[in-house]
Image 1 (cartoon, rainbow, N blue to C red):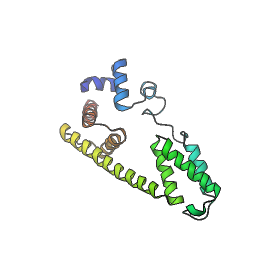
Image 2 (tube, one colour):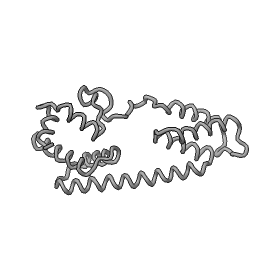
Image 3 (cartoon, rainbow, N blue to C red):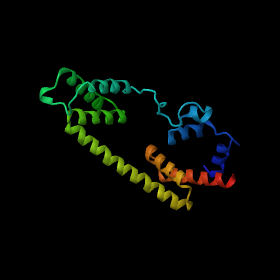
Image 4 (cartoon, rainbow, N blue to C red):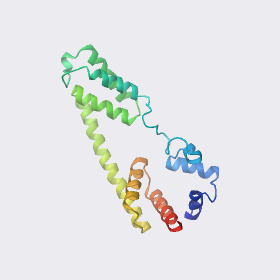
Length: 188
């Protein structure tokens, strides 16, 4: 798609067809309800701030239970039944969910409250993975900026880096976005 067509969609001069909307949703994880009607979150799969996901309530219950203990880490050799139940609930979240945030939070509690070495290793792996993904997102953005030969404002650059990181935007996706934004800025 050329930048003029995309610019026409963005300005409201023309409307995209269903095939384009399906591609846009698939490629950028855009919530079509938001795109068409302005309802809900911008990106598919997000939940409204403050609205619990499937594991938020369970983690809140576990955290409240952990607050009853005075000493950490809790000694595994002399673990009271209440602590054992919390430990098992955290292990269940780590092993049974695909929710990365819930797993990360459960691992944090396993490490701090129970001294769980495996949880500490998973946290270290997540941290290293995060750093590598952030560096890769920055490299993709820098390559796209170089190819497009445009230096957008710093705030926009950081936003695009975050989108590249969070949604795995490719150099091509970033280049397309940069060209569209640059074109829209020229037309404004």
